[in-house]
Length: 295
Image (cartoon, rainbow, N blue to C red; front, side, top):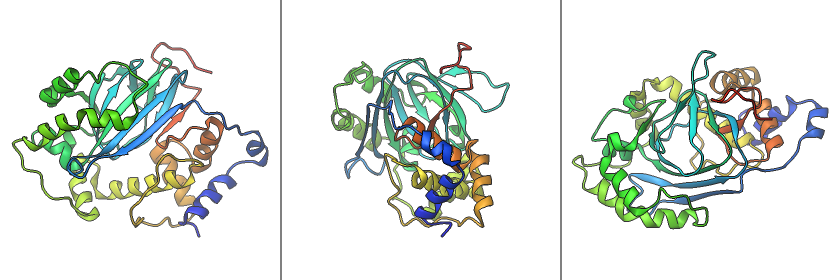
C-alpha cells in the first residue's frame, strides 16, 4: 500500500536506477548520536535530550523541517545557516540558541566538526520559557538564549555545559542540568497547561504562521522521512494518523516542495552517507560561507 512503511520505502527505492543502488556505500561520519527521554517531572516542558558528535563531518547540509523547538548548545565549530533562496546569505547562529519550529528547508554549515547538545522543548515548554510569547516569534529562526531566557543561559554557563566534552553521554548531560531546568520552568510566572492532544496541538502550532494545512503536510512529511530512512535514529511512536497521499506523484511532489528532494534522492543520500540523521542531508554542490565546496 502507498501509505504503509514498506510501500513508502519500496517507492523510494524504485526511483533509483539499479546501477545507482549497486554503487551506494555505507560509511558513516556520525560517531555518536544519543537520545535520552526526559524524566516524568520534566516532560511537560522538555521531551528529551539529543547529543551528537560528528568528527571530520564538515560541509554544507540541507536542514529539513523540524516542528519541535529546541535549545541547542554548539560545542565544536561555529554553525551557520542560510535560506534556500539563491540570494540568501549565511549567518552564524548563537553558540547557545533557542531554535524555533522550522517549517521550511534551509542550508546549514560547519567547517569540520559538529558537537551539539539539544534539548527538545514541548510547546508548553517554549511558551513557559519565553514568558508566554507566541510561537510565531520564533518560527524559522534561532535567537540567543540570553535574549529570551537569561536566567537559564546563565545557569547553563555556571554548570559548565558550554565547554567541549565528548566523553560524557547524553544521560549525564541531562542529569547535570535537570535541577536547573526544573527550577527555571517550575518558577516561571506562567502556569503551564496540561498536555494537549494532536488536534489541539495543531491549532496551537498554527500560531507559527504555518497554518493547520501546512502543519498537517509537515506531519505527513515527518513520518515519510522516518519510514524511508534506511537506518533512522528515531521512529515515530504515535498512532501514525496522518493525511494519506493521494498517489505516488502526490507524495513525490510534496516531498520535493518541502525538502528540495524527492523521496528517492533522500533515500539515496542516506544510503551514500550512512548516517542516521533524519532531518539533515549532506550536499556537495553548494559553497559554504567561505565560498568553498566540500567534496
